[in-house]
Image (tube, rainbow, N blue to C red; front, side, top):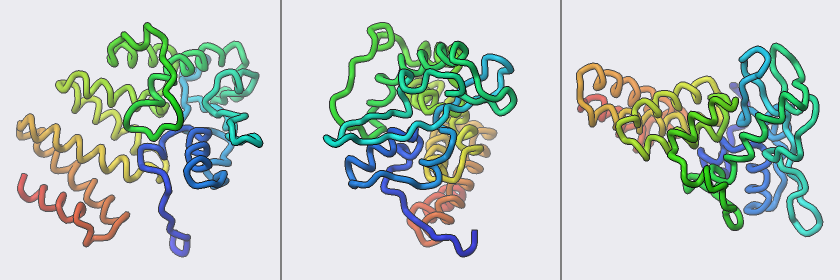
Length: 252
């Protein structure tokens, strides 16, 4: 709003969509401070969204901040199922605190996929990547996505987003479908993902242009336009990307 301080994140648009503990660990390890912004100190972690086993609505994990010990090692991980398996670890907006027995399968599914997702090349990583379970490592991205959704990971969960990116890379015919879903999810998320959503809209527009039907070209123009507006707001109307994507609309 008018009068608010405008800041630039130390994290990339992709890393900004990681869970709280991962973001705090990255900032502490690379910048030397433990972030206590409003998002990192929020009660719930919007990057860890699940489907409520009671009502089917969205349920969010409670935030468990990352803290270094005297040697700088992690003593609390917001993505660790072991650290959060308790009554109320996941909260549904309609049902309230979920019981530990309801939460356990959700966190187990998350923990199973985390080694695969966290060390994807789009994320900045620290240390050596753990080896995923053999079944996870050998499965297709499409099968992993279907399994994660059945297991209760919701659309806003960061692992679902990573899986959709992997599906698009694995099967280019599904790229536009995956990009549409990712854009829609980031549209309802907070302002921290504006840049990422704009990049996804550009990728969607490019995928649609390559297919070339009149309807898809109209959709591509709309995606380019929304991305150009967002980039103009973020970086100014004279920013090269803002200008380039408005020109792309005219050319299409």
